[in-house]
Image (cartoon, rainbow, N blue to C red; front, side):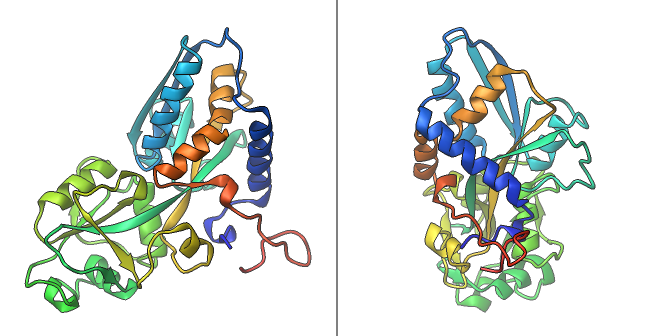
Amino acid sequence: MFDYARKGIPLHLLVGTLLLLFLTSCTGTVGNSAELEGHLTVAGSTALQPLASAAADLFGKQHPRVRVEVSGGGSISGLRAVTGQQGHADIGTSDIYADPAIYPDPNLTDHIVCVIPFTMIVNPGVNVTSLTQQQIIDIFSTGQIRNWKQVGGPDLPITPVVRPSTSGTRDTFRKYILGGRDEKGTLLKTDSSVEVRNIVAHTPGAIGYLALSVLNSQVRAISIDGQQPTQASIAAGHYSFWSYEHMYTLGDSTNKVQEAYLEFMLTPAVQQLAQKMGYIPIASMKLPTLSAAGTSPATP
């Protein structure tokens, strides 16, 4: 079962998300008014960007007078933009939960749209297929493993490629793979999952991490403790490198375009597209079992 408590997701938000998903699946496409028009800005997570962009294209075909502009920049940038701390966005996308201590506005609303698995990747010249979590820690944090021959690979120096502090992928990696440890490696100057992929693809001995949604044949994905980022391994609790994908809005919005786009993200058409693109549809998740008190998810 998915570990809801581990990700810091309040149960009422999950129930609300699944209820909205049920309603949109019953009604088909949403925001069906031919008069719907306007402009919407969506910014933040580069892991969610491929799905958000594809959904925006589909949404635009249904509503020709609507323009949805999707950009990256990282999860932290998305949260800062939607809360007005940095720039502006109508919707801030994020791989991480918005900590109320950092984003205290009670009007900040979380819309969970899917689950994103992440994966470790290596340069095609590295013939290692799996690393243990401790080996990843020793590559990215302690520095005890510096050459691929130490883990059964070629005699080649290891070049770790890491994301900047604005990345939700990095936050998830540090928390659930490195156990909260700091990283050591080649820090990217811009926050982009695609750039991670390109650097690892063209740097001998490189290793990095990215969302499954941007994985392609330029690089090789490797397992963690023999486990791959599948829905089954995540649901069983065997694979911990994953996160919810959030779309945050601020305030009691009267923006009909915003409301319709958020509902559109949960329609069967977009959720099926999400699955094809490497995400896990929110409908595939099971509600957590409540504890005896009925107030918190029990341990899976």
